[in-house]
Image (cartoon, rainbow, N blue to C red; front, side, top):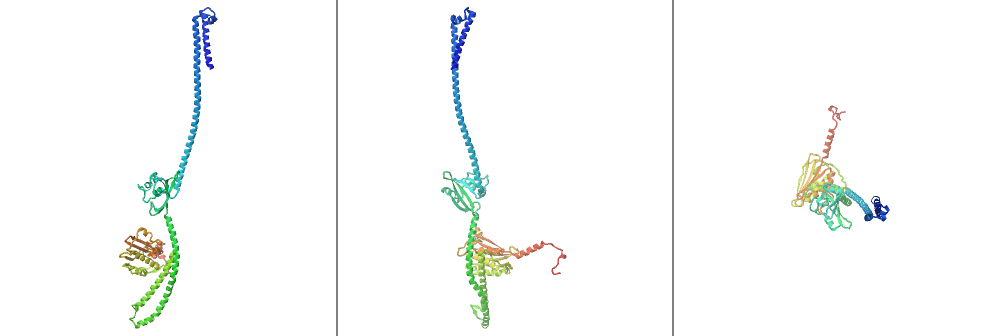
Length: 525
């Protein structure tokens, strides 16, 4: 405000200065009068109006200038106020922006950390999934694959390029448009509960698998995903069968021990009394012979005396042989219960062994219209084997053929072949035209307690014992069978003596050869 007054006063003073300057000019050049008179007291009329105009002009000019200056000052003050307000607003906004920026940076850092943590957790989850040795597949409610571990990818034969997530499991894993037959996943989805079921191998039908389905809950306690775990239980089932088998064999051992004891007691009476009975008959023979000399037409049991005498000793031999077989059978039962076999090998003729086995099964072989064909060479070579074991093998195979050939026109054939090859030296073949077997049954026929017959006809031990006896003789057994066509069993026995001779010749051929004159005869000293 002071500046405006100063401008007005300065303009007024400048007007007075013009006034005085004009009076001074007049006194010097135009009027001969004093400066004071011309300036104050004796102002000429023409000059008075001019001077008054000049004074008023400068005064008004000063007022206008002061007004303009005042307005400018007020404008500047307003602008300054507005500037201050703007600066304060900018400071506030800047503070808010800084705070927002800090919050944004913190949120970005938190999100980056969360993303890094999420990636780490995903890697950890993937590592955990891949570290599990069983196939794992995570599915959603629409059966789309979410996660699959490395074991599952190897199990289904998938590469990293072929794993397409968000595709349905039967499309990705089986390349099928429809769900797999017998799949329990839709059932587990519908009931919302875990399930467990056993199935044949998805990729290998020869194996067994246990499939577990676990529902996975979300935060709102809803089942949105399913975890599928596949466990191979083939070895477990085999181990369980083996444990059951061991328990059966232990129980069977106790049973066999008691049975063997009960059978041995009466059999001992038979085996001990047979020699005494022979002696009694031998002592009676001279009396019978003397009576026969005077009565040559005598008949005993509707037989001539000579036939009766020959038959009675054959009967005694059969009784003795049967008693020996009972003893051997009981001994084999004991060996079977102890998981071992006692083989007593010797040089034997095959023909008598085969005849004894056939005679023991003859009633069953020729009964009920059965046809029995025997193709056996007359002079078979001697073999190094156990006669009782061979006899038991043939009896078991013949009984098995008899039980299998219970249809119309049953036919059983026993044949023997001899080959020069030491490995396939003797081949015993039992053939029938019975019911036959499929491939799965053939794979189990040598398992103990496995049988396709009713419980009253079979125990499942015959072929098991046969297989063990053949193995004890260093031989092998082969099977050919077809459903409704029949079965062929071949027992192949090697000639180990021939192999031994060939081996000795081969070893001797490798020894160092000397000139003939250096070879010294053992007879020359």
